[in-house]
Image 1 (tube, one colour):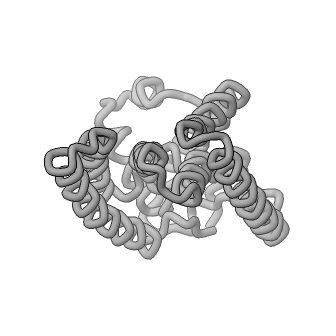
Image 2: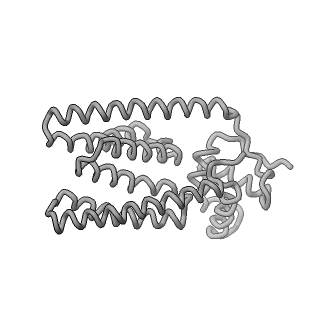
Image 3: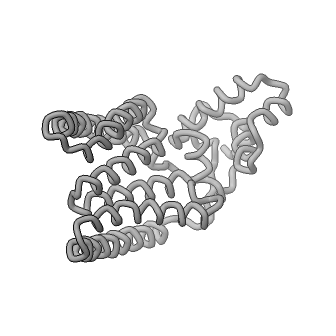
Length: 244
């Protein structure tokens, strides 16, 4: 069973990262002009968020499997747009994309309620910036935001239900279906699935920690799941076997 961490997907992540880097370079340059020539000091946020986001996304170009690193730039971009009174569609859609990426990466597997509350607060921050424009403007922006959230949430839910209906409920990962894998790889993956640390695996098999890490990273690459987090987010409930 192939995952979305395929070579094509990783290439897509790289291309999108480059696109966002170019966009952020332009926006950062625009913020420099606004702050130092137009004395619009609200754009100072862009001077901080822009270069930091560019640095993070540059790392994503090199390591596209680190998909979760997309989240900070998305949040930075969303908040800076709200401070600049941009169309609310920008910050809401960007925040929703950040939540979707976190969900894919298994962010909500633990402490779900606390994390959801935190993200709701992040959603509220951009909305509050519109209050300085007056109640009428704020109410109009709030209505736009609610419509955007409603439409995009319905779209995501319908797509999720459709994809779920197309997926076999009882997942089975047969490691033997992938070339260059061994029965030991399947056993190690089962241990990782159970939450066993790499250090414990190394001790049990009388190997160095580096040997275990390197081998599992190679297996993750073969399975096209990116890394350990990608493996757990996709195969956390799967039955792992090795059967030729």
